[in-house]
Amino acid sequence: MRAHAMIFLGAPGAGKGTQAREVAKHFGIPQISTGDILRDAVKRQTPQGLVAKAKMESGGLVPDEVVCGIVEGRVGQPDCQRGFILDGFPRTLAQAEFVNQMLQAKGRGRPQVLDIEVDEDLLLKRLTGRRTCSLCGEIYNVHFNPPKVEGVCDKDGGKLLQRADDNEATIRQRLDAYHNQTSPLIEYYRRQGVLHDINGNAEPEVIAKGLLEFLSQA
Ligand code: ADP
Image (cartoon, rainbow, N blue to C red; front, side, top):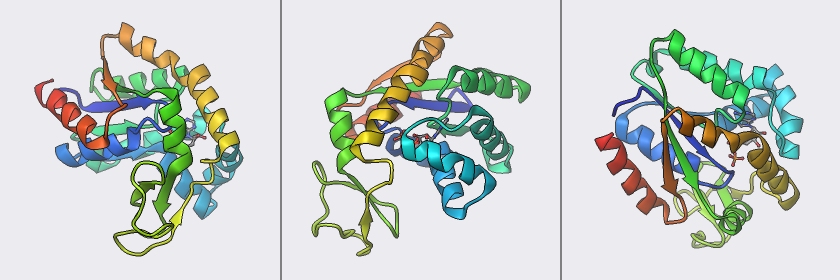
């Protein structure tokens, strides 16, 4: 593994989180998901959570200062010294500039950026069909990998929930935010010579295998 910092780019539903988890496990480095950290802050009603809640429910982006502050704090933890994966961050050019400065200040050099590309109709099915176990966090999809019993986790019997922002109106806003604010990062990183494109239309296991092969050689 060449780079210390890896960034997963991709539209909502592209499978960033799923792939980042596999890669993090493989290399033994932490996965930093701003979406997960924000959802936890909302649940605990922290000051950051209170700012984030309305934005997340509408499908818009949480302000740059809030997410940059979260990432800076997390990356400063000892377990990030060997490297880390940013999942869902950066999402704006200002956030991308922030990451570059942060890495430079830490003497880490450029990140390695993996862009997961998925067709729009498939994204919609993945998002509207997604269900998550309230106990263990296992992810199902009513279209592609349904649980044996509807609404119940195969592993521990936990209740399956739909994420608050996985409804159709919010999904449209999230995809708009991606197209308007995040997709310019693809060219930004391509120009820096650090972008690697990944076809995300296949099964998660197939994508993970190709991804790990690529990263082991990189
Ligand atoms: P997805 O990529 O499927 O939309 P995430 O869990 O990554 O899901 O993000 C959920 C929501 O959290 C986003 O719609 C946005 O409101 C907020 N969020 C997450 N990461 C960022 C970020 N880097 N900048 C701004 N908002 C963010």
